[in-house]
Structures are given as C-alpha cells and as structure tokens.
Length: 550
Image (tube, rainbow, N blue to C red; front, side, top):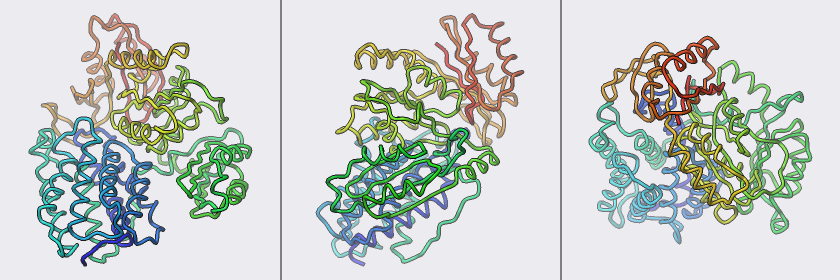
C-alpha cells in the first residue's frame, strides 16, 4: 500500500498494544538490577494500552485526528520514565501528521524521526543506549531510505530492522547493560510496539492473552475500604456530552452531584466532549443516572470491590490508593502531594503536612492521570508534588505540564521515601511558596537512603555476586552485598551509610519484618552507632527495610 490513513493507523496502534501486553513480562525481566520492581514492560504496556483505549472506537480516517487522540491518551496514561518517553515519541509522531489525513512512506518516515526529536527534548539528560537511541537511530535510517511512491510495508519493515539493530547495540553504549548481558528494556518494549504495527500492516490478527502472574495492576490501584459500609462498587464510565449541553457542562458541578451520593474516590475529567468518571459507591445505578443527564455512555465498567479485595488478599497483593479525606476541602494556598506505598508510610506523610498520598512506588507506578486527579482534588492554588521514586519524577512533571494552564504545580524531585519525608518535615504553611521550595529541596539533598530487598535472579553487578532469593543491601544506588539474612543485609546497609556526622537514623520496616527482627536491629544500632534511631512500621511491600540517614 502507498498510504496510511487514520483507520489503518488505529489498527496498527491497537495491535501494537496487544503485542506489548502479551510480552510485557519479558521486558520486565530485562531489568538490569535484580530487584523485584523491574517494571519497564508493565509501565510501557499500561501506558500504550491507555492510548489505544482512547482511539479503539474511533471511525475516523484522518490520521492526524487519530494520532492526536492517541497522544492525549498516552499523555494521561503515562507511567514511569519509560511510559513518559513512549508518550513523547508518539506526541512527536502526532505533531508530524498535522494537516494531513493520510501519509505516504516519506511522511511516515519523517514522523518517526520527529518522534525521536520530541522525546529527546523531554528528557533533561538523555542517555544513549536506551529507548531514545533506538528511536533516533531507526528514525535517521528510515528517513534516508524512504522514497516517494515506496510501499508502506517496505519502508516500515526497514525501520523495524534498523530498530532491531540499534537495540542490539545498546550494550555497547551503556556499560551496565553489557555487564549484566541484556539489551535496553525500554528499547525492547518499543520494538514490540512496532512489531505489532508490522503485523497490522500485514493484515494479521493478534489476540490479547491474559498473563498469569501479570504485574499489571489496573484493578488494584482503586481498591480501598469503605469502612463499615463495605467496599461497594468501583464504577467507571465515559460519557459523550450532548452537544446542546456542552457549554453549560462543568466538571465541578458533576463532581459535586456525585459527592452527594453514598461513595468516595470521585474523579471527573473532561476532554472536549468526553467526560471520564470514576467513583466508589454502594449504588452505582444512582451515579449512572446522574451522569446520563449530560449525554450518552460510551463505555461502562462496574466491579465489586469486595470481590477484588478478597482476590487481592488471596494473592498477597496490595496497596490501595490513599487519601487524606473523602470530602472536598476549601481552597487552600499550598497543598502537598506525595507518592508512597504502605499504610504506615502513608500515615507518616499525612501527619507531616501532606494533603494527599497517591498509591505507588515500587512495582506500581501511578499514571499522570492519577496525579492530575490528586492535584485537582486537593483544591489549592499551588501544589507541591513529592514523587519519592526516581521512576515517578518524569510522570509527576508530565502531570504538571498537563495542568500548567489550570494550577501551579511544582515538582520537587525526591527519589526516595526518606527524601520525601525530610522534605515534608521542612514544609511550613506560614511561609511563602518560594521559601518552602528552597527548604524542601535542601532537605532532600541532605538525606542518604538505603534499602534491603530480595534478589529475583542470579547475576553479578560491580563485583557483587547476586543470588536469587537472597537479600541485597543497597546504599543509595549501589548494591553493596547480597546475603541470606535480611538482618545481615540491613547491617551492611547501615555500615555503608552511617558515619560520625550522622545524627538521625530512620528505619522504615516492611510488611515482612517481625517484632523480633526489629528488636535485633535496635540492639545493633545502640551498640554500634551514636545516632538516634527512629523505627516506623511502614508496612511497605517489596522492601524489607528502607533507611534514611541524616
């Protein structure tokens, strides 16, 4: 074929999303570090599936219209650094399609190259040997190759081959990949998307398969107890507004109407004539009746959260989304939002001037849309976001961009839970926003972080022999030891972080730590260090201990 129009492009995207979903555990397994939170494949799959969902019911043959809608879906659904970069690649592709209803081989090649240019601009310090390299090198090659009147299949096949070659070279550009013997996971995920594109161009039909043990947690992030009333129903729907009611419709009005129903966790987001609604309620029919006055349903999903909760307990999975309250608050000058996993950690943040805690962190990164919803809910003129995870910083920054014409959002790039807690301690509602930002940024610079978690595979990193299921001691970003005992791993971590200048040690204990183990650690710290010890029951998954040293 000579052209790609909107309908074909939609088919390519949907197939790409299926291929990525079906193979995302293999991408997760490419994680360089053997920690149980390697989630590149999960983040990319959730991100791309969010974009595909936005366009799957479109009938338009206008490629720019479809690509623009896809870009919006990816923007809101982006999770983790890999998801954000993926969304920016397709934002660049969409921009290149502007003014065209269909593109030929040359136009498609230029769009792919523009995807790389936009993605590079979105990253403050681009690293070669990553997904960025793969899209850039493949884009450069296909632009050289493409000629007018060439078949789309020919050009795209060449592009995919160039991407494969680039991916194979990533270990030569990024030494840590070569040391561990893997290719870049983000680049591999992107290649899966484009493999799906190729299948669609060939007319292949690929079916989505459910992955046993999948780490994709769409059903988990919204599960929360509703007290004595039970869990109720997680109710989600999309309404297309009646044209006659478009001008009069207000998100706030619908949100207020839903808040009068028995329920909570209300999110209302409008995108032109489409309104997406999420609510936890004991009577989903009332919520549907309320919304239907404004238009017709495009999509509906109602799930019994008690059943979800039981399944999650059986699978030993967590963590619910955390809120500071279920009722709307009067507008305040400055609000603070943190991202964290674990009920104990959540409570710590809420006690330290934090207005809202978005569930997320290891293994479960929130989407940009999750953070946008949180910012809108706190109802403040200025909002400070603490991502508390290096893989969530870009997502938080993307949420800030989405809201830049609506609310002033400032992202303090906290990369660990101890950094976030220290920043929260320094927040003072009586001083100016600028003074708070300065103090909070200084605070995160003065915290050292350590962690203890179990290894998921055998490998060797920086001379440390890693054995699956043993416990690793992490000092900042470095793995310093791998031993059979979590307590011995913690001792190694403390020895690597605490020095004569250390004054406070904050020990956050995970959900697998026993009372006896805490007592053993307390004795060790008392016998070996002068610093004051504060022990917190964080109840976090994945990491047995999180250590903050100041």
